[in-house]
Every structure is written in C-alpha cells, then in structure tokens.
Amino acid sequence: MNEGTLTPVLLVAWLALNVVTVLVYGYDKAIAAGTRRRVPERVLLALALLGASPGALLAMGLFRHKTAKASFRRAMVAIVIAQLAVLAFFYFSR
Image (cartoon, rainbow, N blue to C red):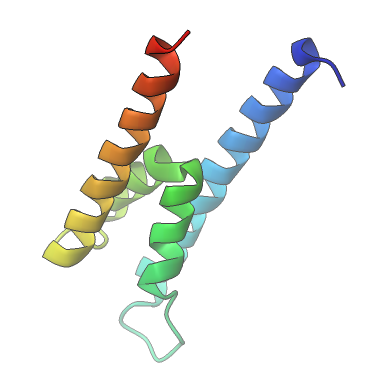
C-alpha cells in the first residue's frame, strides 16, 4: 500500500473509531441508571486517547454524559491538549 492509498484508509479508520466511541458513550449513558455493569472510565478515556476525542466530546455533549464529573473533564481536557500539541508539532516540523 503506498502513501496515496494509506491516507483514505487511516481517515476511514479514524472516523470509525469516533463513531464507535459515540456509541460506547451512548451505551454507558443508557445503562447508567440500571443494574448492568458500566463501561469503565478508563475505557472511555482510552478511546479518546487513541484518537477519538472528537467523538468523545460530541458524545459528552450530546448525551450529557460525564459532564458533571470534574476529574473526567480534566482528563479529557488533558487528552485534547496533548493531541493538539502532537498535531502542532508534526504540522510545524515539516
């Protein structure tokens, strides 16, 4: 696979990861009041860290999920800042 075909594949994978993340956040919100086992916060944050922070932020706002928990919000902000720093580094190091 050459560089020309790798970019669309990575974009589709990134979009799929974000869609899955929105679904996982929605699932966790839906079962939050019940007796089912919840999705651990570390899993929700790991999805964001893997590149799905846009999906995680969208889901947090859309479902109003994990927005009241300060420690979770701080972790999300740290992840987004770290990802923006990495993107800026690669963009400006060209």
